[in-house]
Figure 1 (cartoon, rainbow, N blue to C red):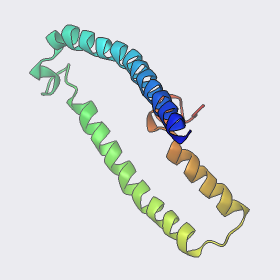
Figure 2 (cartoon, rainbow, N blue to C red; figure 1 turned 180 degrees about the vertical axis):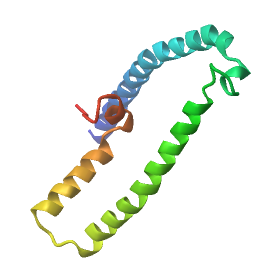
Figure 3 (cartoon, rainbow, N blue to C red; figure 1 turned 120 degrees about the vertical axis):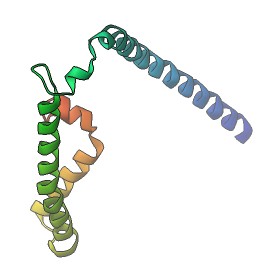
Length: 123
């Protein structure tokens, strides 16, 4: 009886894995196709002039992005560490602390691309 149940479980697991691989292929194939088209059609437009000085340069945008990311990390990292230390060491259990911890768990399970691409809504 146990052997039959184990065999049936392994068979259903194999079917589930096969379906997951098919679903992954269905998702990855169009993304790979779009990426190939972008590379093939866009490679002609890539020149060294895009990164050097000039009217069509992307260098100011890249430098501005790096400054913004660095400043954001410099501000957010100490605040995040201080909040984590406070919540784990000093905060008393209460409704506010429970709500904050629920928000932390929710953000932990929500993919970052979902929050960034949908304007901070993960639905």
